[in-house]
Image (cartoon, rainbow, N blue to C red):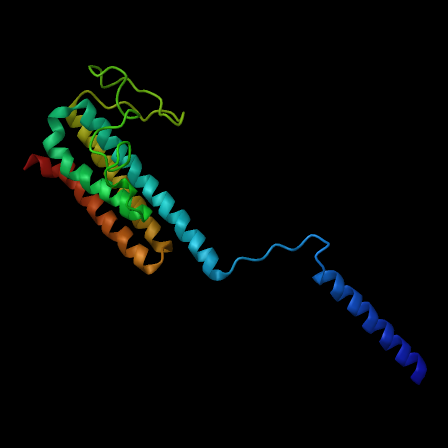
Length: 194
């Protein structure tokens, strides 16, 4: 019995050594490394930043479209548009939206949001990326302001909802941008009547 037990243990140890050697050799396909909790958190924050910046960028593009269609609203909309451009930059976590031509911070409306015929604010165009153009800007400035206010309110609501899953520092930024967006919606509708 002693000799049989020894041979069995030796065979088991040898089989285990071969198995371990196979797992550590560089010849086979390696298992993908699982991302750490910090890496997963960083990816989630990057995705949230991208979505949040895109949400505010859509609002910024609508400001540009309304400004292009209704230049008489320039004095009223420019300060709000400037704030939204700053929101895009802060939410994305970069300084790129500050003012380079064609960037989100550029004060001139982009070609993507202008109408095909400057005299007709209702003619939509396709964007450079090939995505469908946003809905045309209403010819009536009051209706255009109401639609812009609705979009500002929706953007604020989206940021408020997103802050629940954000890291504390980014959640504070989202809360601030959401509050600003709600104030913009008020200024675009009720505030203009005062």
